[in-house]
Image 1 (spheres, helix red, strand yellow):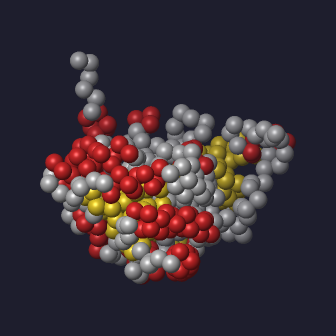
Image 2: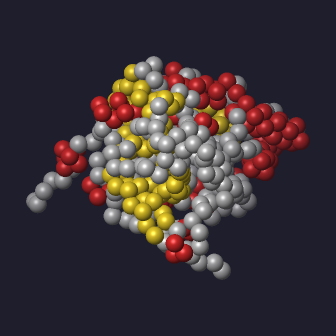
Image 3: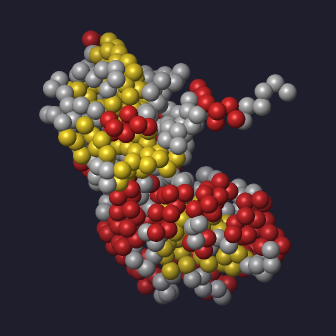
Length: 467
């Protein structure tokens, strides 16, 4: 058994070289293009996104700030829409959602997946077509189900036996039948982090196919006069780079689909294959093109349907972070730079910025890797291996574990981190009473705030005092 230092491998004895996939750049000013949104460029060391220099953006809107590339977002949404022609493509509201983004999703012809009443409220405010909304969640409240039924969401994804009865009762009270899908677990574990691999048996989502619970859930839905069964829903995980994991899952889900037809006499018209496609956070990541993903998934499903002798159901997918993740970067201001001497004489350069785990918890939560670049100027200094950390009172408050930055990085510099569109703002917190950053959309040289920065008044608004 090996033992690592709690603050990371770099604190162990020996030379400080960085992880094996990280290469020292010949020029630390250059952008690694595949990590950034498509309008990101550098000129004289200044990073611009959507034609807006981040130096100007920070001067007007402050830091930290999430910078949302509208052109990139729409292009990625369109790429999945066009590649998966004939599918329903569901944008993951949990990745990042605000009214502006909900409207972009609608305008690009995508569907929207929500999993709380709050996400539903954003969709409602944005005027999103409710027939194109799917409602997920393993513990939907009665109030949330009533809202979904009242608004006429296109489908509710059933996740428990209690929910079958709960939703049926709500639907009867509203005098309607609600279209549902049944989430099943296919016993396939995606090659990803344990906490985001969602198709193995020992987890909170869905009904197990192997135990028989999934078939029982189908029976109960079919027996209800208030529910309309549309099909089965499967999701094998997140940050997935190819379609290999879908093959076994599709085989098992389609086998159940066929069994429902033969044993229960019901041909379900739809099936959701999930998705959770990966993005490039660092140079070790190699995400697939949507066209390749679409071709692979089509081939898998068509092959299995032929083998089972069944008609191809209408399919839907959920790309997950793959649309908004690469469309956002976060820009920070450097506060302090501290060289720390380690065992063996190695030096770790700690670059402290004005955000941290309150605006990006993923490094601490998932041990996620990120990249970064100096964003406000060019530098002739040779690169040094740096660790970008936040301002919170936690040793694990790390934004970027390992990256080469110019050796003269200093207080007042801007540092930008790509790939922060998915889950960073959604999972942001007020830890240490930090104020959550704004989301600033950029396009054609214009920056506009779509989610404003929190203020201390916001922070104190829920503090009712000593009653």
